[in-house]
Length: 200
Image (cartoon, rainbow, N blue to C red; front, side, top):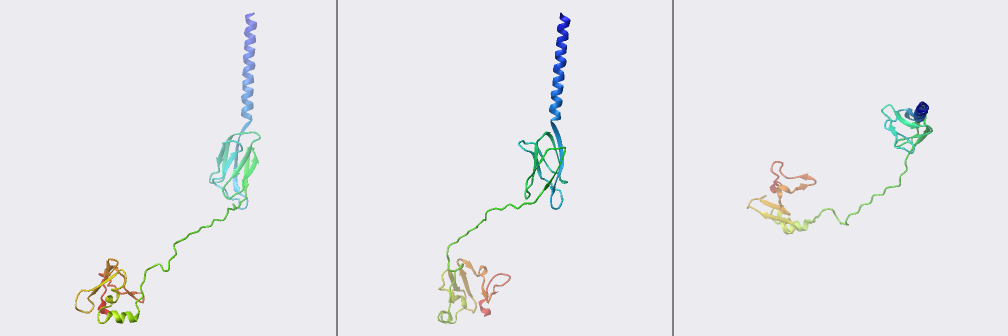
């Protein structure tokens, strides 16, 4: 009686072990490793960095510098999709070797309009016109800076009795920091920045 029971238990264990091995074999045979390449359909060059994923899963790989990829544990009957920026996606059924050829595609985007505005102004800099008549009336026998003494933000003074001793300040800056030009040619001394009004 005990021998029969023991035989029966041994038989059950063997059947259970066989079923387990069969199930494991079936599970393993239902998955595969997929290898392949991703290339440009027009030039045949490798598309390094292209993404290949198993649809519906997070399983995937990126193509290396040669365009090659390998994905493990791919279920039988699965679909693989390859994608890369600037190319149309391509899908293929899983097999031991899958080679993708992607075609270039342009991505149309809506137009971008950049607008800018600024306050209206008559001129970007402040200026004052001094006419020939004004020069004759204001200047007399004085140095040129004295003709600008009535101009806003300008202060001119005669520092000595000689010709060319006048000094001018514009908005607090002395003439070392004020560019004096005649027909676009700077008149300031290159070494110290002074303007020698007696030169003209």
